[in-house]
Length: 329
Image (cartoon, rainbow, N blue to C red; front, top):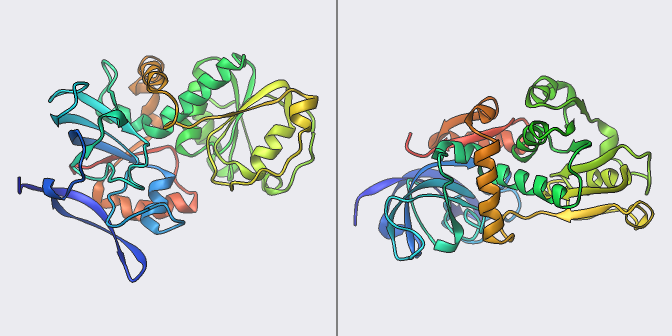
């Protein structure tokens, strides 16, 4: 089929990634069992890194970024999906190793998809996206660890995962403190999500003591590095940290003291490697507990042509909430 459609493609020119919105065809798409007509994708930190050439996110060129998308099945060679089914894709290295969501059409492996929950719109799914799915998986991890109420702190609060985590936790009855790199600038926004307090400052970039005063029963950390080390040092006895991000670095400069003397648990959360049944359960909970009205105040919709410029805002840390990409506008 030669009918063309719009996609954001990153090519490598003179060793540097160069993003361009251009026309491609189905013949250009990779192999896969399911062809999907995409309605919406979103902008995540990894997408911004891929487009701006920060780090080595893209593993081969050319690449269509976009680590998630929602749309409608057009063709399927899988018994799990039929033409007309609404589906969601999050993670699985799309936008990094495999072509992703910044395209009006995409072909993918069936195992990467999950059914769109009953009653959820594709736009709402991407207002949640990988960030929201990860946030829900963090909440579920804390619940499984017995942290079902109490004082919770969320780092990287004004980003996608942090914003959804704050709103989810507040709606579930937790007392939520937002930890932000720019607490004064983001205070009103974070309070509007349901946070009871907003904290942050230069001290959060400094190496913490192995143990500090107990402050939190639980935490959702999307930063890592020194922020994670400090959160671990401030947990209550028996507390837990659901960690899902590495923006602050891969290292963890701490000791065994929080784990041995206070029984703190570090819970790793990955939205890709968790079993499909748990991902489906998380999406079903999001459909029930985080409906469209709860998303509206943290959601911004942009066209595909705006993604390149907005990626710079993500890398500068000035973007708030969830940015949904309407690939058909």
